[in-house]
Image (cartoon, rainbow, N blue to C red; front, side, top):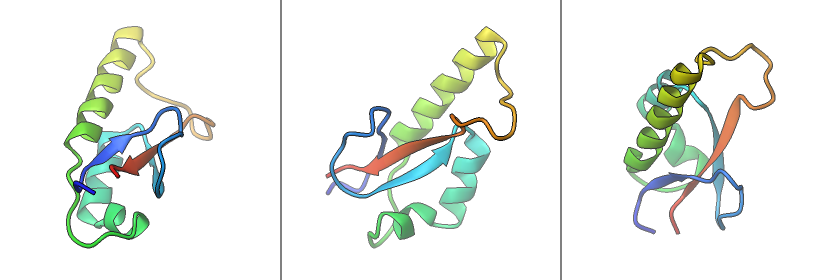
Length: 85
């Protein structure tokens, strides 16, 4: 494993996964709490650069469409992420 976390939008990558909301604040909290290392059962810090880029891209697209805020309880609130095998 190379120690990076990647978005798995199709939910098909092998290995352990974790769920994350489409929210950069949620990503910051997960990093601060070291949640990815615990959820993916790996030692040390993980690189979340690809995941951060993806979340920023999605946020920019939502702002462009006028859908930046999602209602609570939306079934699309969480998205899977995977550790890179």
